[in-house]
Image (cartoon, rainbow, N blue to C red; front, side, top):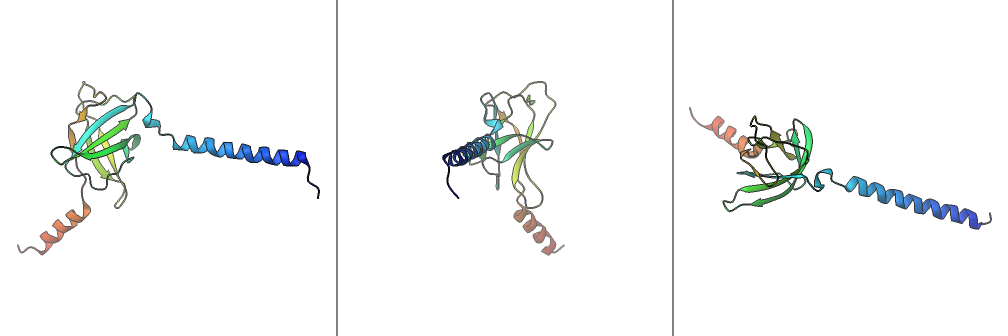
Length: 151
């Protein structure tokens, strides 16, 4: 079988096109829709944020509306969480944030429950009403302590 320059050119173009297609797909998959300019940045402070990780989802009624961008300790040694949310959201000022688990042993995420206030949270504000993560090991320990305790 003889090699022809036309066949080599076609094969080379096919390889280049394939590499470009893979690069475009990787870029599109890697984009975060909640990191766009103009997104809503909110903070929430929790007594306990065990298991919550950076980039964890933030949901409202089971619909993903954002991501956790940072978790750090505040001056009172509580977990302060920075969330980036869809910029089109209008959340009442009495919205609450809870750290919940997906399933029994799943990943932790933040669930937002909307309040009824007319005032709307703006970017950079704090969600005042929070509920910390339930730590399964502590809960089991309390149950075992109560079962073993004399009446």
